[in-house]
Image 1 (cartoon, rainbow, N blue to C red):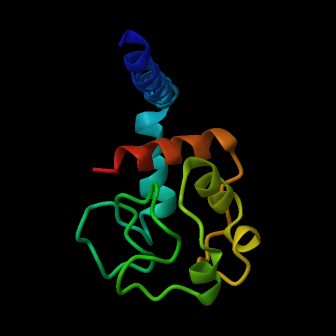
Image 2: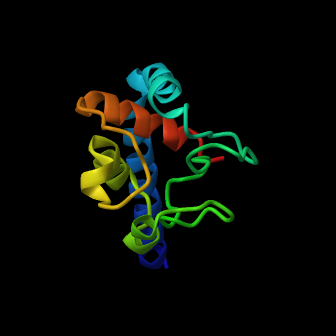
Amino acid sequence: MFATLRLPLVGLLTFTLAQAALAADCAPVKSRGAELFANECGVCHAVSKGTTGMMGPNLAGVIGRKSGSVEGFNYSQAMRNKNIDWQAENIAQLITQPQAYVPGTYMPYMGMASADDRQAVVCFLKEQQN
């Protein structure tokens, strides 16, 4: 009986520890991510649910969302065809150099050179999931 309970509990514990590690990685950069987002991304993107009319799609809940999938937003064909689920790694790649990551994207951003800054922005976006 205990053997059958062990695997789900181990999986839950592993997931919980991974979440705690992620939160710990993000803790020191939370305010930096908000500042960077406001200065670098907030000109084109919102993170408040229901906000529309920006140059870029709303990024509230972007983690796990399919590329090119915000209803009513006019994406480039390249972004619609990218067909990925946005996760920390590929968001970091995108903001490094959008035109190289998605050739043909409408995103005019030149890119964020600092890996630490990219991590801070991704951490900020993770906080915007709810």
